[in-house]
Image (cartoon, each protein chain N blue to C red):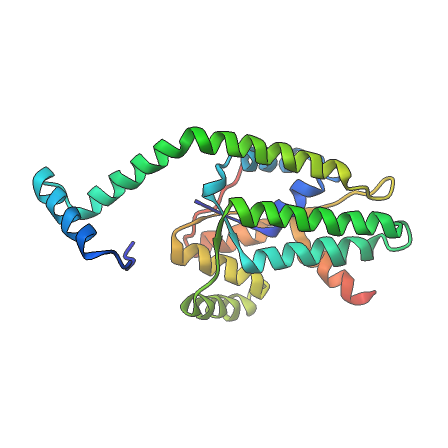
Length: 86
Length: 152
């Protein structure tokens, strides 16, 4: 995928220097740096996800629909269309 | 990275009222996606909010108290706040909107899809995202366009 981004000149020079030194394409250096960054965030991300899921579970418990209510989310458009008829 | 459709969000919030096997599979998969990899678009938040605050109370208008409707609005707002704060947000560019309209026209003659669904397809295509939706018709259109989509 081709995408343009704007980066500091220094950053670009350093990227070029790393690419030359390691004899790898610049795109591969960027891929590896981003992967390394994502890996370094993994532990924190897992904790955040757990906390997020717990918070959502508490929210879900607050929702009360009438007894016997059933939802089918496979085709929300149908429910929106029904709204027009009311 | 997964671009999340509104039916996944509604399904998570109303999980007590939708217990079929397929929904549980989608929810189990969704719950383990890292927040950074969940891509939420402005038009999906809009559709989610409309569904929760307009469609649900309208469907049960005679059976829901004012207080219960108020709770739905509060829960919807808090859930949106969580997503806006923690997930990856995206807004379609002008070229994505044009691509979406191309899809909308293209499928309008054969298999109608809403413009919101067209935007979801175009955003996924332009950014290389995988679509996470429970809508079978949308998954079929994604396949037509060679866009990745998750199916349990």
